[in-house]
Image 1 (cartoon, rainbow, N blue to C red):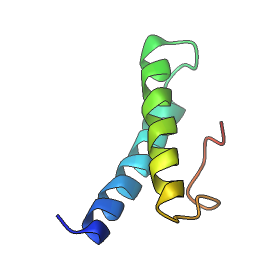
Image 2 (image 1 turned 60 degrees about the vertical axis):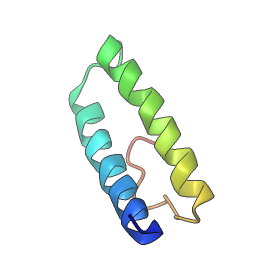
Image 3 (image 1 turned 30 degrees about the horizontal axis):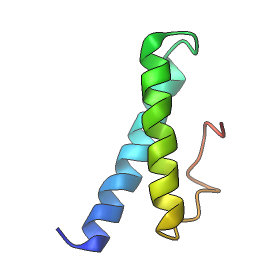
Image 4 (image 1 turned 90 degrees about the vertical axis):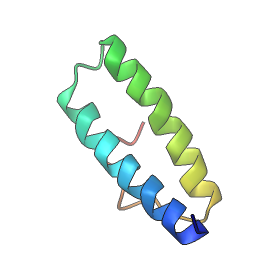
Length: 60
């Protein structure tokens, strides 16, 4: 898989994960697990030079 494909996959996962998080109760165990992945993806995308200003809807 090329770097471009990997970035695209991570951006898509980040966007999908945020949709699920918005549907979940912030006090739930599921939300906490999703939040961990959210932080991981945020770090990966930021380190890859992706500007998350428009993509980040959770802003935690």
